[in-house]
Image (cartoon, rainbow, N blue to C red; front, top):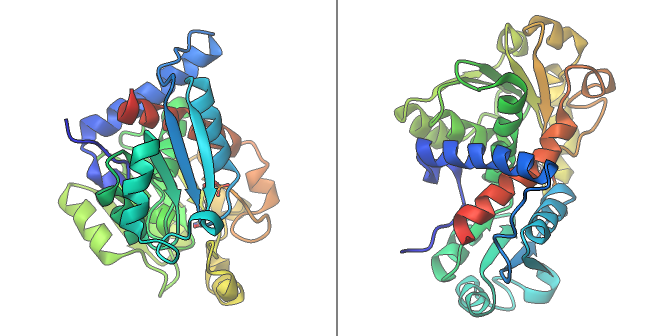
Length: 303
Ligand code: CP
Ligand code: NVA
């Protein structure tokens, strides 16, 4: 059987995605009820980080430990992908030692190249283009709180970035409506939007945050300046200020709307403290679900 990777939600089909979500929830329950099985005994996951992380690193490390496996944490200082050594060579070599690799990096093509050369599964732990593990956990959180994402309206505010792109990919597979509300000049990739629409995605790109919030089931935001964009922080903050999730925007959504944020959050910028710490927010369930969703991915790729 050819090896599988998890680089993008767009590489999945709907049954694959639904299976992963179902399995993530099952694994969450199994762990809570003391029924978890150590299905990855003896397996080793390498973790390559070119950017900082709290959730991604700890949830992958803890997840492997829960399932009986181990991890090796690698920073770019040690391996120098593309500088000390060609991406392909790193993939070939790591394939001789490890069972899978997770990579968080800048340029998405590095993750794709690594997957092409490594004879073992490669998982995208965030690139400048995509953040598939995050959206898996996000959808799992909506399902957990609302039973299903079917026919729901998910509204994303701020920057048409990696997180928005993975939401768009998911909208190409599952029957929900996705509204992306961004300032002009910060729209998501037109190619990603078109591809998802061709697969049936109900996706609207808006420049009016109030229209996007109206009767929404989920309000979602992410930082305005992603990792690597710190120098643009002020310019972005000026452009995105009208897209802040605050009490006024929340009032336009459904009365029981959920508020999600991939974290880390900047209270007072993309979201107010009142909203992220308020009763609609499920951001810590969402962060927890990174663990369960990724364990389903690890099992799917490795067990
Ligand atoms: N949401 C997320 O990916 O968090 P980290 O950057 O802390 O891994
Ligand atoms: N868009 C953010 C997500 C952080 C989890 C970034 O890339 O920094």
